Length: 130
Image (cartoon, rainbow, N blue to C red; front, side):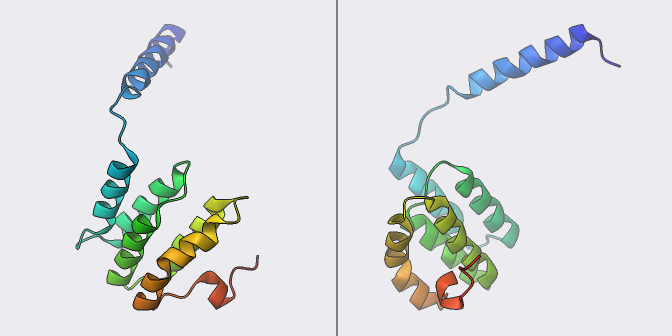
């Protein structure tokens, strides 16, 4: 069993480490977009990396730019993973929240890619009704 002194010491160390981490360099929107496009454009990306990347990206307080989503959808195509492609579109719709104009805009921007890759939208599949 740990003593209370040991617990206090551990938590104060953890908070110092967290504060040090928060002083990292801030990346610009362009750098952020480029980092994610590069991540999803890796020719050897596997299904786990795709899911991990999307989970991380969706965890941010933003709706990903269409160019990032295009790279992710192309990764789905390389992996022949239609289910993940549909989940990406569903996640974008969910992340759009009350801003009803965002999802149609993203779909409009992605439509040429969706057509090229043969990826239907959740609405076209009739699975958007929950």
